[in-house]
Image (cartoon, rainbow, N blue to C red; front, side, top):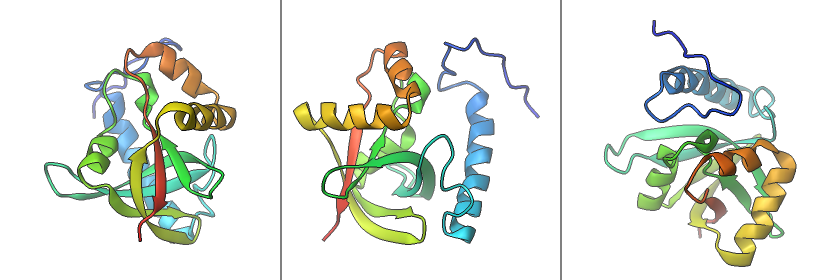
Length: 157
């Protein structure tokens, strides 16, 4: 089993770090517990959690990612593509750009959604709301050169 490298508090594990292998195993367990208990276990870890289903842009493999979320003024779920402040977008964001219609789950509620990136004033307002829920997003943005995307999950009709 690979050793997890020690990180300084301000370092972000880069995309090729072994940290992400361990993180993915934890994510698999988290997702299974969340689904089994309809969010009673794993529904709040460092913030409120939703499960985002997505299809691999290249592989077409179905995946699920537990993510911190906030809601907008219309009741849409909003997620942040931070990946801890690394210089590469999370895979789930690439997947959503290729396949924006998917499903997401909060607690027992599972709904079809269409993902879109928030821009301009909407993005700034939602970013502030997300930072209120999960303060580390601010330091994640300072760590990376990329502008961290804010994604709105609207009902897919």
